[in-house]
Length: 181
Image 1 (cartoon, one colour):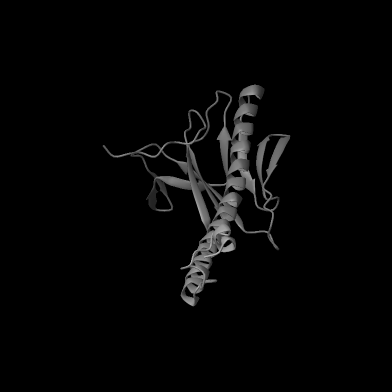
Image 2 (image 1 turned 45 degrees about the vertical axis):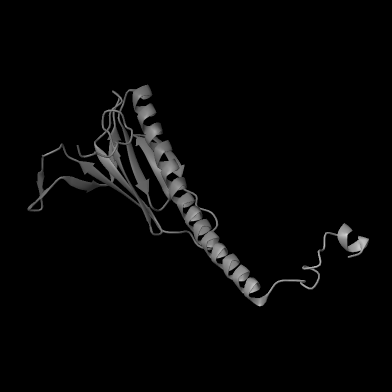
């Protein structure tokens, strides 16, 4: 072995091998393809989750606005969702505030659905249309001067994602899920 070969780090056994075998190239390309597929799927899910987060953020801003206004002005406020305006609306008589839901990055606006359901006390029912029900779909919910609100559930839907939020009527915050035991 000459001094040039030793200085470059090429040994006698490695002198004839230059490059990758076909099998190594195929395995490498397969791994790159699999990783890029996982990456693209996760990016799509993160973007869609971001849309639901935007809708939920506006919902919580509207809830806080209704709750704060009711306490500050000492009169009831109503929270509803306007499909035409694509906004949550907080109102009391002549006063009206909107919390616009803006979803970007689509050629056309994705469909948004917001459903409010009035919740009845545990183990209680109402007879509506000949059926006993534990909740009833409503178009608006109330917030009151003492800081409380109507017991309700908000179902937020955008594309194929749904988020159901149960609201505590005493505090206006999300109720934790019940755990058995």
